[in-house]
Image (tube, rainbow, N blue to C red):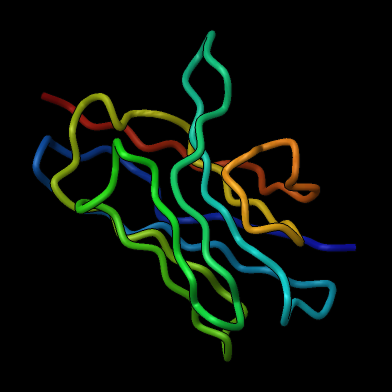
Length: 122
């Protein structure tokens, strides 16, 4: 059973930075893909970024490209999302998820964390 636990959310002003963490446990993950998604009330879950544990391949949505950076720490079984130059429209609950596919499709991710709130004030 894969378990994902996010942390690092909070309330910041526009232009600030935050780093989200997602600790994975419960299974080997050498070929897994880790993704970050976000969701606001009344909207579908939106893809943010994903990364492969092994090769470190990354992929970003256009809305965060150049501002956010995804990375992994294999020794800590943790994936990070460094968020810079935050904007009010980045406000959402951020979820990490695990998949065996390198894809932005939320339906391909079978394991999800509980989410962490990020609020960016103007």
